[in-house]
Length: 85
Image (cartoon, rainbow, N blue to C red):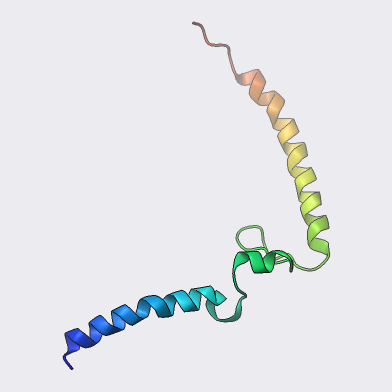
């Protein structure tokens, strides 16, 4: 078998193999994101939260963000000037 044919076959086989690998969750990290939703798994910049404290932590963070938004909103409306038509 020629090298070009072998590389072509490897390329064709790489696609389904990568799909299976990604659907399996990269080797044991869990399946789809929906599978981890009920188990306290959060991916991304939110950090690693797990267990029963995650809901309380999220509520605390939301309250902090709501307070920060409430503080910033009046200052934004004060700096906006009405536009002349």
